[in-house]
Length: 493
Image (cartoon, rainbow, N blue to C red; front, side, top):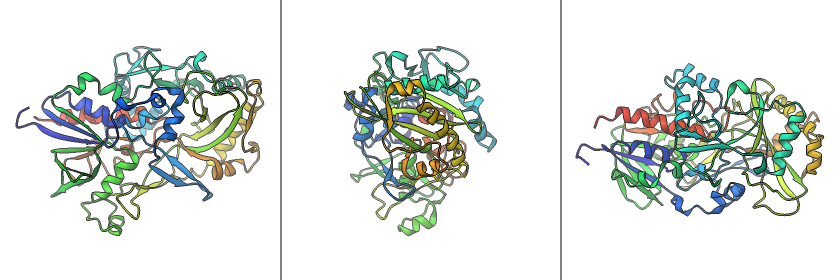
């Protein structure tokens, strides 16, 4: 590589970071170093690779935040993967995109290049859809192999949910990513290979041929403790070992909780909050002040008989409507591997549109993890949940649910007037879709550059101005792909 090579450091080898490293290193004039705090993906065990054991992956990894329940009793875990591939290595594999109006809302807010017609080509280019192939909505040449679970692969609870909801009149759809078919009852598209094993973004993008590139350096077990800021410019990073690495540009892809944490530790964030910790302020920005997430109640059930099936937790779902397309219903198992006897599952109800804003803050000791407050549900949440609960109560009486032999673990009358509030107080869970902690328009410009600091960008779920109406996994891939394009276009080396 020549002396004019531009040095780029990517902090975080998760869902977005793996994509970004692969794309940027396609330009041999860029020297790309990817730093990941966790282990490489050659350490993936069956608990990660086998979709039926995804709940083990959730339970086996340390939650990065525990935010209090509404009633002050217990906590809501918010898990992000700390290994190469990040959350794409431990999530439910669901590759939903959100709705076109989500992205058109971004563009309408002034974020040029982020409208639906701008991003749809990126979603298409990222996938090889084994069911639909090349079309106006899907691709057949991308790194991520995508297909939908077959009926014979699905678990008993998921089949009972699907069949019961269909009997109640839900509209079956072929493609849950096609806005024109919604609201409707469908099957999650998931990223799996021919052997039905998980395909994380590191497995899809950081292939052996990509790793062999001379201009790509991948370091695992590398914890970045702070950014090096000089004269209003990011010039490198410091590791927990004390080692420093110089860079011409730094991109943070540590996830919606750890990215703002690192920025604030480095003096980029709300000035008053940083002053409380004695941190020198390099840029007074509302970092961590607008966290979003898909949260909602999870009603726990038991059903008689083995769990069965070969699919993972993301199987059948209903995208419903109480006020527009706004509710995601699905049942997912939380027991470890298939076993005989009663099996537990959760009927989750997530509100896809949420105006609530949570926060990410430094704790008493900034060297420890972030302090997270979950976003409150919107003002009309009880009304929307009441609509959803009536539908689930009807499902409980369906032939499919009765044949399943399911019973609530902590019974709640879903038709009672106080059911939504009680569920919010006692059964709220996070979908793990934390976003918007460093949003464009407040912390970043529309090219995801940190305002007031040169040579520094963010390229993960943190950048989203508002949360999409769907799982955020594929959205993170889209963000990384688009930031990579912007950086490659800007690279004059």
